Length: 245
Image (cartoon, rainbow, N blue to C red):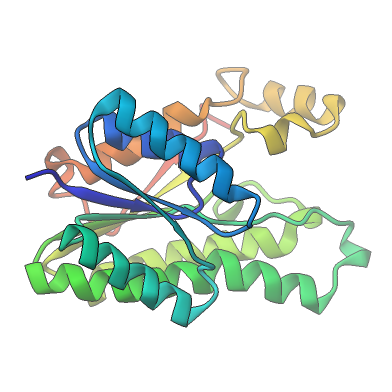
């Protein structure tokens, strides 16, 4: 019987790469999207995965900030698959603005998505995992929450530091049955980052020991490792994947 993995925010970037990596490793997968425009991408990804890797893929629209929507998503997954073996909290936003222009509403929006969302999904997925006395939760944090800081993304940085703290607390809460870890990517070659000013990209690449941004697939492979049995004794850990910075 195949394992089942839910990846939030999984139609683009790291989320999409992670869903594909799970499918490659013979997991049934749950593709989560929020914006109505993401429906087409989610259905295309579902079709690609099922036709390429011959596993089952389920696409679900759910806003991770909405507790009722999260509960319904978990209920639907249990109805279809009967279980959740792995959760990857990937959904997140970054609203870059000059420090002086940052408003309370920006903070609320960012924290609701990047921190409260992972709490809600972990809470309800974790309750199902505890029934089986096994599971893996992997949070996608950032080096912005550890050692790289940008006042233009001050709320994002704070949310990712909070997600690391949440990781440690969830590992304790769900012990000894659920492993909860985090990955902290540095710069990743996603569409969002490709649109950054070229001068900034050049400057940041010079700070990276490997002199390049990561590909989404390279982050996904670390996530897959943490989800695997090879990582069964890794818990409450944060793994930086930044090429040296």
